[in-house]
Amino acid sequence: MRFDLCEDLQTFFQKYNLEMPIQTFIRKFESTCDSFDITEKKKILFITKLVDGAVKTYIESQSIPKSFYELKNNLIREFGTQFNPAEIHFQLSKTEKTSKETHIEYFYRIKEIASRINMEEAEKYYIIKGLKENRAIEIQLQNCSNIEELKEKMKLLDIQEK
Picture 1 (cartoon, one colour):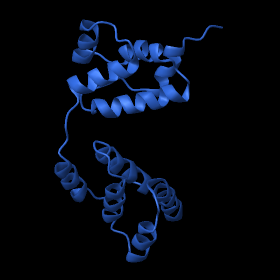
Picture 2 (picture 1 turned 120 degrees about the vertical axis):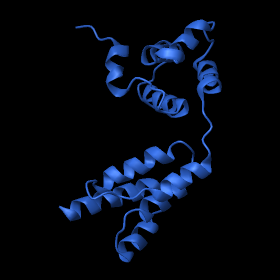
Picture 3 (picture 1 turned 180 degrees about the horizontal axis):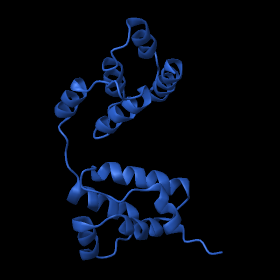
């Protein structure tokens, strides 16, 4: 039985679409590749299978990069969009948990919005602010030292509600 590593790894990725910031796509791509000890050269080959449209045309129109680092920087320079932190903060300040969402679904929705810029403390603030929970739960969540601890407490809230 023969395995095609690129084909097998595709189960961990979505194809790139222009709605996702290229920086986020590359960060997720690199994280998965690092988990599987993918070489730099294979990263170059594999990323070309995950992109299409303008990004693929751009890659094909350039000389073969000497490293994945070079390709990554070129893609970010060409397709990276600068997000206005004030706009992200505004969007986060208006986002609240819906009655149809679980706590953890809401947590990941806020994380996706906030991922456009690096802002862990703000993520925690907006996650807690939008919950509409009682004050005791808010205080408990505010005492979380990092985003992972907050996520675990959000999971516990979902379990307690069942």
